[in-house]
Image (cartoon, rainbow, N blue to C red; front, side):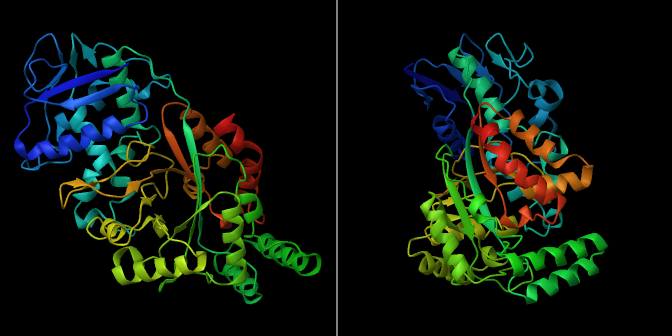
Length: 449
């Protein structure tokens, strides 16, 4: 297919920049059929789609544009902006069949798809959230996110919307296998070594009332470490760092500093850290920065931690993921631009498996301050095992089944960045033992089988 798809619109001048950003996003989307190119041209004699009120033989999307038009004052619960929730139930269809007449009928789409797409990919609700709605991470509390409040977070709503849009305008069925990338955040290297950590761990077991059996198990495990050379419970790196080449890319994010209780429990220049860096490189991983708790809010701290990692790795560090997913929309993304970061992978949930941006595919986030796309690329994180653990504790559902069901639900027409922490594979914990079995026996077949 080689098709120039002409779009004309009735947008105000203030909305055109955001609209072009959206069209650029659509043209770069991996699910777009080869040869199709969307072009905005109000001067063309003919058009394929009109974004506005005019009707004719061409396709039409009704205009709302409340998020595209910066001159408008927007209520995030503006009813017509999300009428697709009330009127169109295609998101609930697991087989992604073409929607019925209420979605598209007589060349007319049922709602403003463009406005909806921009809302999700720009993270409009987060950027414009009031300070009282922001949580410890610095951004909008997860229970306030639109997708979570409406139980839409487990499916990539942007990718599904675009799949249907492309199918309608090209009359071509889209059915691509999902792609996968894998990553790891290293927050802590060891649980019991050196020896003082063992006694501190026992104290935490008592303090948090984890039970006599875990206290005894910890002592027994430590004895085996001392007498038989058993690995530290958190030293899972030989299994954690995957050797397979099927992953689109593989990244490991390391810490180099910090000034809070949430921060660095290891030194990047200690021998074991250097061994892990070398092993990761040997297995095809890129090394990325995992900034300390406050580094995403402090320019000097971010820069110094990046330089320290570059010195330890002897290479430029251009990949990033925020520790605790800490983020300030007014500060953090501009630190990336200043310090030469090319990719970030912070856009995920701490306590949910799902698509925070509505898409799993990498793309450029929108810079509201300067009304343009950022220079770096966001790699949304759809799956993090610690999020599944949180879900297990809240719902009492089986951990393995939660992870398996999420991956099976998204086998087509999206991309999934997966994240696993070495410290969550602790064999002294039931969740750690479940994770080890899942990671070693099931994950590869679920993603690449």
